[in-house]
Structures are given as C-alpha cells and as structure tokens.
Length: 478
Image 1 (cartoon, one colour):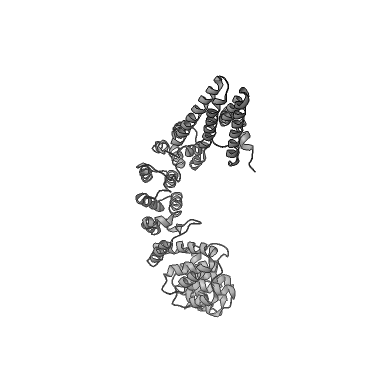
Image 2: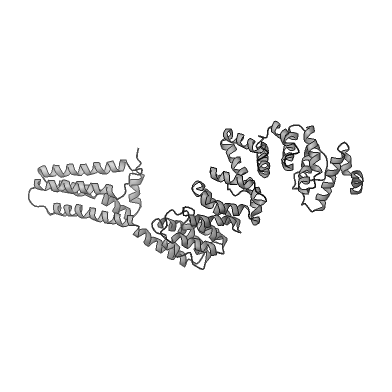
C-alpha cells in the first residue's frame, strides 16, 4: 500500500514544497470553487469535475512510491481535463461570472508554464548553472583535507558530480588549476563518466601524460574508465606500467571491468606491463574479482611459453584467475587445471604456479603428485609434489629421494625452499626458524642452511651430521 510520507514531505520542505503542492491541487481547487459559486446544473457539473480531477490525482499518486508525483507531463493531464471540463460547463452557467474566465486563463497558462519549466529542467540549463557555481566554489576554496585522496569525498565534490550529467565543461575548466586538490576534485566529479563531447576526453589524456601527482593521475584514469575509444584505451593500458602502485591499480580497475570488449586494444599494454622489471613484485595484473575472456586467456598462455618476467607474471595472472574459477565453477575448472599441470608441454612456470594453486586448495591428487616427482619435471614442481605427498605421509620414500636430489642442485633459492620442507616434514634441524621467512640468499645463515642440507642429502642415515661444525661438514662431504 502506498506510503503517505511523500505527501507530508511537501509540507515539511518549506515554501517550495507548498508551492509544488498548490500547483498539483490547483485544478481541483478551481473547479470546486466554481461549483460553490454556481447554482443548479452548473454547480453539479463543476463539482463532478472537481471529483474527477481528484480521482486523476489519486491514480497518479497510487503509481508513485511516495504519493508525491513530479510536476511533469502527468500533472498536465489534470490541467487539460479541468480546462476542458470548465469549457463545456460555461453554457450551463446562468449570468456572467468573472471567476470562470479567470479559472480558464489559469488552467490554460498553467500548463504552458509547467511545460516551459519542464523543458528548461530537461535541457540541463539549471544543472549547468549550478555546476558552474560549484566549480567556482571549489576553485575559491581555501582549506582542503590534509590527505589528498580525501578531497574526493567532500560534499561539494559529490554535489558537483550530480550537476555534470549533461555537460562536463565546468569540471574540465578546473583540471589545469595549479593546485592538485582542485584538479583531483574536478576529476573525481567526472569518475566513470559515460558521455563525452568531442575533444573532452582528449583533454584528460593530455593531463594524464604530464601530471606529476599520483593521486591525480589515478583520478584521471578513473574518469576515463567508461570510454570505448581505442586511443584512450591504449593510454589507460600504459597506466599499468606507472611508477606508482595506486595508479596501476586504478588502471587495472578501469580496464578490466569491461575487458571482453577492450582486450584487443589493451593487450599490448598488458604485455608491456607484465614484462616491465620495475613491477616485478606486483605479480598478477588482475585485481580481486576481475575476469578474463577467452582471447585474453589464449594470449596469456602464449606469453607463459616465453622467457623471463613476462612468463612468470603471465603464469601468476592465470593462476589467480583459475583460483577464482575453482571457487565458483570447480567442476568445469578443475579438469582444465589438472590437464595443464600434468601436460609436460605446458609452460614450466605455469605448471609450477598451478601446482601451488592445487596444493593450496588441497586438490593435488596423490597420483598426479607421484608423477610430478619424476626428474624430467622442473625442480620447483618436484618440490611441490614432494611436500604434498609428505603432508599425507611423512615417510613417503619416493618423495624423500626427490628431496635428496633437489638438495644437490646448485641453486640456493631452491635449496632454502627444500630445506624448509625437509625441516618441517622430517624433523631435521637445518638451522631455519620455523614460521619465519627464509633468510636472504647471500646471508651467512643461508650459506649455513645450504651446507647442512647438502650434508643431510649426502648422509641421510646419520642426521646428527647436520649439526656439526662447518669444518666437520666439509670433511663429511669429502
């Protein structure tokens, strides 16, 4: 049943609300007054007309959630009905009554005024005027939040965003202001804007390429996130290689929300970002919740087969995607992941990342793990398989043999990872602090752990040797 709270909100909203209520009920008031002033058949005619307009208003209110219809085309119906009813009632009036002609004038002029005001509102002229006032207020503002990113949450910025529905030029006039707070506020008001006039989006891309403040660059990227022009998408893709992580995240959010329609234009930017050595620690290029279409998956699989950082980060990106799919659609995703890990022709780094993923989800089957222990597989993959098998049974002979082989490989990073598994699974003290990160590769602790691991691999039947002095370890190895 409709609520009357909207009706009473007219009375609580001040003079404007009362004026709006009067405009809505004016046809009924005029017909009711005419019925009171008239006599005989004319009085009945006008009173019936007043009831009819009340019914029309009631129907309009019944279809409004708040019982407060807007003063738009629907209200014009009340005026047209009342004007027609009064026109046909004039012949029934005895004598001459000035009020009837006055009412006719009001009922004819009222729709014209309403239609004019409706047209002005729909044209955006009022919003444009208000947006210019808010732009001037932001430009003249003296005090700003101490944290630059907090400027986006100011009430003036939120109100400014609502006034830019039809025209973005008031905000674009602020993007060249020397103060970063003003530039950030203007760009935040344009966030995810859908419609741009010719040349407007290019103004923001020009700013993006010369802007020194990371927060402003991130806001500029967010403002262009809804565009579908190739040149702008390519500029946004370059943001994935920005020196500031906040800008890279903003670029990822702006690009991957509609990756199905944009991949063909952003793929080269994504490739350059994945291969950029300055972003080595970023790992996956995806953010939480983002998806990849099949063309993107095919490209990433091809990049996994290449060398270097591009292969590593492409593998990490696919691993993150499959991690989400394993949670959402495990029945369709698990066979595909198992096939990629088992296939010796799959890119090695991808097999390693996906094996870690399976182990983390406890989906690495013992049969597959046993196959991965084979010496023809990459060493990190063998280590993952050995750890998985030993978690099920610490005395797995084939896994222990694989650990001994891995301990002899001349790779200190792999040796530290192997030492961690041996110490946790077999209880051999190799000098690692359990629960703590492994020591840096060139530290004295790392060298000592590597020596102890090699001693264990050479004399597995006598684990006490690993606790001897370095001189005695070297003698044992000789």
